Amino acid sequence: MEFQVLGSVQVHDERRGVPVVPMGAKQRALLGTLVVRAGHLVPTELLVDELWGGHPPANAANALQAHVGRLRRLLPGGAPGPGERHHEFLVTRPLGYVLSLGRAETDVRRFRRLAQQGRALAGADPAGAAEVLRRGLALWRGPALQGSGHGAVCSGEAALLEEMRLTALERLYEAEVRTGRCQEITGELEELTAAHPLRERFYELLMSALHRCGRQAEALGTYDRARRALVHDLGIEPGPALRGCLETILRQDPWPPPPPPALSPPAAHAPAAPAAGEGGHPAGGCPGGDGLGVRALHEELLHLRGQVERLSREQRVLAERLDRADRAGGDRADRVDRMARADRTDGADGADGGEGVPGVDGGEGVDGAGRVDLMARVEGVVPRVDGARAVGR
Image (cartoon, rainbow, N blue to C red; front, side, top):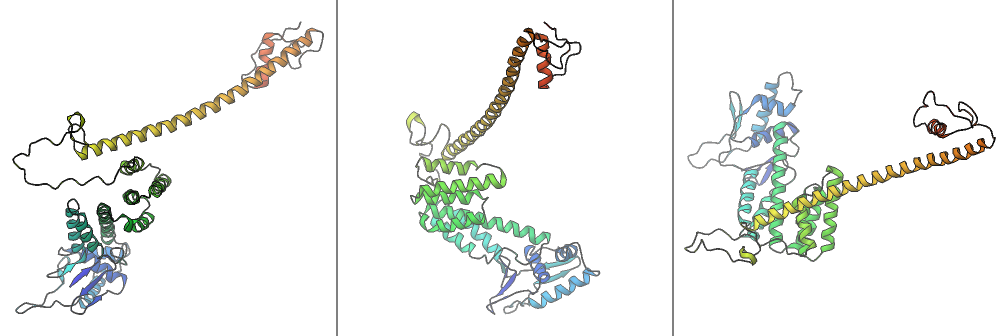
């Protein structure tokens, strides 16, 4: 028998060949919480909180006992072998309840085992890793603990399991790319980037698969789509890994780099230096580093390039603001200069016997001090200086 939570909560009874599905959200939440904490005591208070949240019934303990009784009747009885006793799955304790699995299994445990096996095989046997990871992902029937309410235990476990699923998907498609199955997986990766638009690793894998298929233009378009999503939703630029994938495509380099050789027992000649490239360093490497060191340096270089690009953008913005300020100041200076020329013309007319400039003390003409006072009053730049007088001619 297997308790299953990778989808809606249910129990698969091998003897009947059909799933046993709890009816009602509270029954599903109760079974889901017990499966998540299988083999451990789940306190009564925690179960009440999981089923009713902040609005428990008046007699919550009795209501919980009723739900436990219905669930206990729903669970199929264990099939004892010769000389074995009947196994009780749902055990009552003084402070709560325990789901005792006995010989039963959970789909979560099976998924975790397969995910770990796939991770272990990825370096040396990517094809085998992909096969194992697909078997593990096939256990999923939908969102984890679907329909089990919004209690803290079920919600937290569902989020954790979903992250494990996405990580397994990333490892699966990386293994598929390494085995050369790029054409077959591009459609699946397109769906994943649409479903998870802020998860950069899926974009990176899709770009790599497209690049390996000779579809460079689509790979570059994928990067542009990823960048727009990240900038629009998070206000950030793509990370070093995604930028590194872009650089690889632009340089037309092969991707991914060959996997590191599997570790083997040291031989008698183990201390021998690796094949040297130019300068006495390992071929394709750098002083004192292996492939990982080269990748780290490459990512750091890309990070610095990003900083330079950001500073360049800020410089352009500041330069545009300065140009606008200069143009505004130039327009103001032109207005003052035109008024000064007009004032000199009026002053010359006054010297020939014309009338004085209205509003200026002394009346008839304007010399240098009067012109300064006039321009200040008209422009509104500074208040009129008390005692300034226009001297008539």
